[in-house]
Length: 391
Image 1 (cartoon, helix red, strand yellow):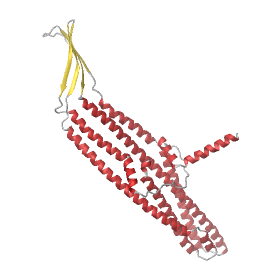
Image 2 (cartoon, one colour):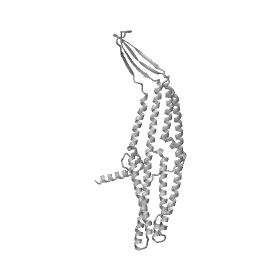
Image 3 (cartoon, one colour):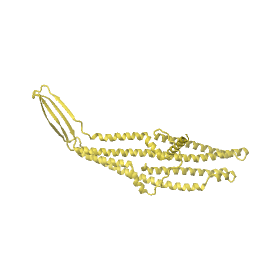
Image 4 (cartoon, rainbow, N blue to C red):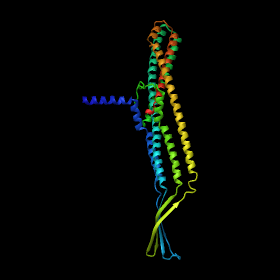
């Protein structure tokens, strides 16, 4: 029994640890998300659809029975079996296009997956920020409650006035309101994660951000980001498909063929032979080559535009990460100089400073700490977007 309890405790500890690991949460969401599951099904459907247009046309079977043929009374019927097909290069080009489209759908699916996982990761980082904010508000609320108790006692003995009580009560009400809003925000983010996880709740209690290296070399990040970006790969696949469509359009200008069997029934005799036909596409594929070339030019422009936009986005994220990191270090240094509230509270209790002076000192402390938390959150979210290619 004792062994079973120990094993159960170990299992719960491991499970709890997994729930508080962002990578584990992302793996769970990837496996359970309904939109991702639908995207995978759509991708398979698209791949099958891309292959459906590269088969031979259906064979044709025709039988004609003749009554009262005055010109050839001995002929009673005619049977024709034929199969039409395009020039062989048409099938080879279609096969290549199907493979290229399969890669395109893979890239589109990877982009959808990456975007959704980034949304989930940002929700996790936002929850860490809200937990840190909750800890700050709990500290602030406890301090305000302590002051309220002290000054309520002082008011009863005549050592405090109603104006001082009002200041403290105002701080208490404001802090409680912020704490309530914080709880609502935490619940909302947890619900968002549950929705991303296919409706299954996630118990996320991580208090600190994961260790992430601040990027020092823009060129390295740029190269990795551009090389592995599924969206850009998708545009390049579209360009490859468009170029291959030009080859297909040129192949369709070549003749189509028809082979078959034909038999005439004359009394008790069957006369049979081979049917050979050829179709010259003079009108059906008019302007298809021009259209394919225009589509390829458009796809090429899309690749150039997407590459430029991606490079600009990375540059902006990199600059933002460096600015936020510098601001975060400066704020951390300043907050260390403030120290804790013990000295300030002792000065108030000993009468060295007034309550007004106390709040003059206290307010910028909390404002700076709140600003520090916001900058820290923005910094880690920016890094998550900058390292999106790792998802």
